[in-house]
Image (cartoon, rainbow, N blue to C red; front, side):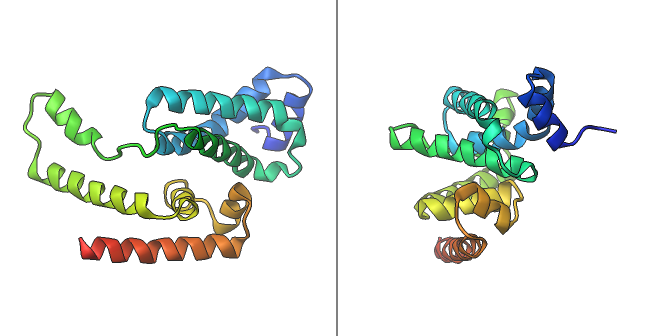
Length: 181
């Protein structure tokens, strides 16, 4: 039987580095994916991720509800990302170009479908960029991370209702902007 997050947190606090590695194995991908989507520069994303890992390790003793570990860790990463952006870091990553770049790198002509998907992804990115920061964050956590509104509230320090309201306002705005395009 695998140890629970509670077991691993207790072991980490007792100095067992392998326990923290196990926590990182369970939750690190979600944190990395969130940071990577927020950061255009891969090197900057790696630095942010490492900072989030270090900060989580250093502050693990402050975690009161272990069942909220993932949300807590994501909130650390989101806060670090916001701080970096405010200091002038680069923002939105260009998602959706991977397939197109792979085709070009392989010497193949990009397919019309790939070009259409890229264009649609570009319109969606542009519409997302126009959303207020909080709505953008809620969309990312809901759609990309699959978090519930309660979890989003914990990550962002808002109520469940505020998460829902931000999400539905964002969806409404995205629909309006994309239908105009």
